Amino acid sequence: MPDLSVIVPAAGSGSRMGENLPKPFLNLGGLPILSRTLRCFNYPNRVVEIVLAVSPEFKSLAKAAVNKADLVVPVKIVDGGSERMYSISNALAEVSTSAKFVAVHDAVRPFISRDLLDRLYNAVRESGACIPGISVTDTIKQIESDGIVRQTLLRDELRAVQTPQLFSLPVLREAYRFAISNQRFGTDDASLVEQSGYDVLLIDGEQDNFKITYPVDLKRAEEYIKSKLI
Picture 1 (cartoon, rainbow, N blue to C red):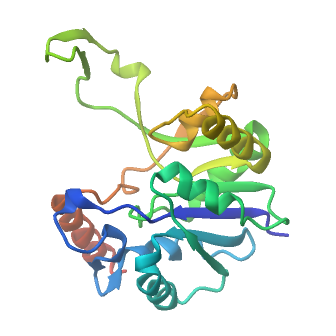
Picture 2: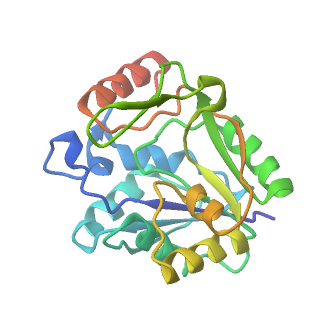
């Protein structure tokens, strides 16, 4: 029986793209980016549901994107919050009782493979918390507020983290209870899980599983679609 619920927060403004529409609803090869992202989880033998958190003013666009995705897996649309963590908290409240695990995935990361999802799923069953990451190729420096370099970090110890991030449902719910009650914020869900006292396993991600943040990323995505004929 499927036991994975997928949460997709899509309530952000996407201001860095420089468009009037939020990024998930921008066109990518004839479909909204969000439609392509949702299709990555259209596996009814694995996925119970997709819970999509969107701003109320964009619910009609979200429903249209869901329809265009032509999914077998059911989709629930819930209200997004003022911060990403509140959107996910709202989504967690609507997760099916049949779900044992939950994946949280960026709405504008439309190229996750089935292989990566399967590897994450197999790992989270053992670890309780698992995220994908790729090696860092640039030299990374930690700086002071005035721009002076504090130290150069070791690349071998660094990873650029991706989504989906998978957790057992009790682990993620406890992390969000802890974060909200203590006003803790993080740049991803794994950081909240870490703060609540759980270990997080990192496995190899994929170079093609990139996030569309800037116009150059959208161009890269368009080229990717052309090369893969998808």
